[in-house]
Amino acid sequence: MGVLTETRRVDLTHADGRRWLDLLRRHDLRGHGGAAFPTATKIESAIGRRPRLIINVCDGEPLITKDAELVRRVPGLVIDGAALVARAVQARDVLFAVHAGSPTETRLGTSLAAEQDRLPGARLLRVPPRYFSSEASALASLASGGAARPLSREAPLTSQGPGRGRVPVLVLNAETVARGAELWLDADAPDAPTRISTRLLTVSGAVRRPGVVETGLSVTLAELIGWAGGVTSAPRAVLLGGYGGSWLKWSEAADLTLTPQALAARGADLGAGLVHVQGADCPLAFVADVAAYLARESAGQCGPCMFGLPAVAADVAELEDPIKGPSAWERLGRRLPVIEGRGACRHPDGAVRQTASALRVFGPHIQGHWSGRCEGSGARGTDRAA
Amino acid sequence: MSAELRVTVDPIACTGHGLCAAWLPERVTLDEWGYPIVDATPVPPELVKLARRAAGECPVRALRLAASR
Image 1 (tube, rainbow over the protein chains, first blue to last red):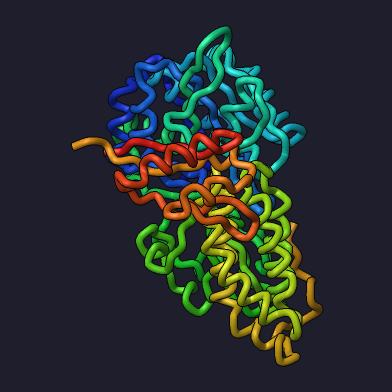
Image 2 (cartoon, rainbow over the protein chains, first blue to last red):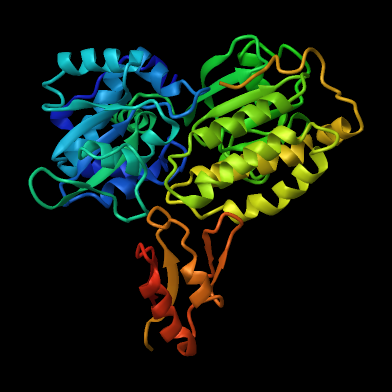
C-alpha cells in the first residue's frame, strides 16, 4: 500500500474541491518537498486568486531520487493530484517543473501529452540542474521568463504574468499532490483499508540496496535500513533529510521511529526524504565533499552565502589536518552561527545546520585525527559524495 | 500606539558597502566579509533619524526601515 503501488485513477468529473481540502486537513497532509507546511492551508490561501500552479518534480539533491521514482512508477497519480489542485484553485495554468535533460522530463512529457484531457494546457517547465534552481521562488522566477534563482523573501509568492501585472504562484511538491490524489481515491472507496500515512525515502550510503523506499512512519531507522538490504559495514551515523539536514550518531538513531515528533526530539526531520548511512569508513571525505558541494551550489546572490559557505567548506576540508584542524574547528564555531538566517533562501541555513551536526557527531573522530589516528576502516575517501 | 520601526536588509540587493554599520552601529554590525548583521529589535525614537539616514545612504537601497505593529 502506498503511492508507488497505486493503480487507481481519480474520476475528475466528480472531484469536489472543498471536500478534498477537508480530507487533506483531516489527514494533516504536509508538503513533502522539505518544509512540511500544511498543504490544505497553502492551497486555500490561493483560492480566489487564480494562481499559476507549479508542481515541483525536481529532486533537488544529488542523492535523492524520490520524485524521479514517482514519475517512473505512477505518473498518472501525479497528474491527477495536480488536476485536483488546479480545479480547487481554478489555476490559470499548470507547469510541471522537471530538470532539463532528465529521464523525468521525457517520461512526464509523454504522460502529459497522452492525458491532455485531464489537465488541458499543462506543460513542462525545464529547470537547469542546479541545487537552488528548484527552490520555490526560483521556479516562480523561471516560469515568468526570469533566471532560475531564488528571489528575496516575498509573501505571497508571485510571478510576472503574461502582459502586465504579477500573478500569484502556488508551488507544490510532486509527492505531496500524489498523496492528495490517493487520499481522494480512498475517500471515494468506502471499503478502502484504514490509511497509514507513508513517505518516500531515498536510502543511500553504506547499504546493500540503495534506492527509494516507501514506508509508514512507525518503523525505526534500523528496520528501514533492513529493508534496504542491511548495512555493508558497521554504521557510524546517519544523515537525515538532505544535504541541509542533520547527522545523528547511529547509536542514538537506530531505534528512533520516523515520526516527526521522535525525530524533532533529536533535532532532526525527514526533510526531502534522504536517509544516508555513513558506514565504518572515515566520514571526513564525505563531509568535506558535501560542504564543498553546498558552497559550489550557492546561487551567489547573498553575501553571507556567497562568501560564508566557501569559507566553511575550506574549514571543513582542514579539519582532518593535525596542524590546521584545531583552528579550523575554532573558526567554524564562530562562523556557522553568523551565517544562519541571512540569505534570501534557506540554502545557507541548511548548510550550517548539517555542518554543525557533523561537528557534533564526528567531533571525537575529528579530534582523533589531530593526534594522528583515524578510526575509519578501509581506504579514506572510498565513500565520496556527488 | 504608533508602529515600531525595524531595520531590515534585502540580502540579494546588498553588496556589502557597509555604510549602514557606520551610520547605525546600534543596530548593524558587519561580518568578516563586510555584510551587515542586523539587530531586528525595534528602533527607539532617538535613533529613528539616524536609521533613516542609514537607509538613505545605502548605495543600492538594500537597507530598509519596516514598520511593524
